Length: 412
Image (cartoon, rainbow, N blue to C red):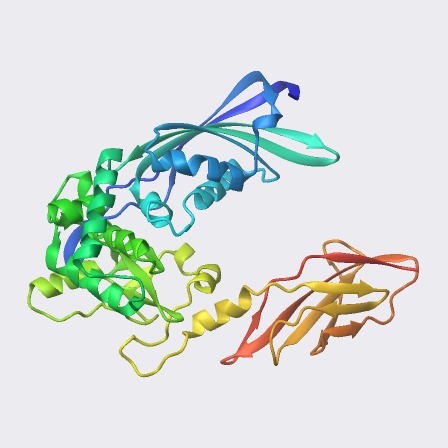
């Protein structure tokens, strides 16, 4: 076991509250929705201790260790991370994102994220230089609170299996029919929890057993059941009619569509038809939070341009752009001054940069349609760094992929 004595360390205390009692309008009624982390209190103290480096792991490994504990409602969890990221806030954000990523398990992903009522992480971190590279060792001591108890969640899982059987959902059924039956079930059975001050109304448990919830509970139940029947689904937080709100996107065929079961439950119970079922990317009066609205998210969850009932089937403009922007260029081979590039797709151009500086300042560039390229006018006995990306025009706008990894060549 390797131990390193550290004389001076910083103990940083940060309280991140993931729960906010903001009042939210849904279908012209008030609704509550948990919002993004708020950094509240930061203190800096001196501390002397020893560091056991053997128990520190990557962010991904740490999330994999912690996820089963959060799934069992553990309240106090220690996390040990090793990373090159210097910012504790960024490290914690990446850890939380990895912890609550989509796994296909109905008790994880968005369900886990929205079942966490509050978390308070305290942490210490220690920078160490190893072979000329600085690593940061973080120890997070996290206190969790949950909206539901473990007993309630087990009861929920059992009841959902019964509901799926009651709805006649079976293997081989189309995603459309699965979504429609779940949507109709929730609209028929769940009332909006007006003026409720109970935290349980934020949950799928309340929606299923007490038959009332706010938008978070509606959307969480939709997510939970559809995950159980293998329909790709996400819970989307954002704004509706200018107020905080939550809804879902679901996948049918190649496309994701918007569904707002909270609003349509109200419509159904007033005798109106569904107005928010399987809507395209231009979802009236709904605006997503930024991290659900960027090209990375759209690349993973491409939206249909038109509503499902439309005869037209195509991806939205933003989805098409996102699909291109997240492509991964790769230099397949370098031999002398000759490059072989990974083909991104047809009818695109490639920008190749080469420079004697790692950061590509004053870089030379080549614009080409070819994937086999010879770089001319390289100086002998010089080391060059090379990277490339693809570009194309879509509806008058030039769209770029990310850059390939940097590679180097030594010209002899």
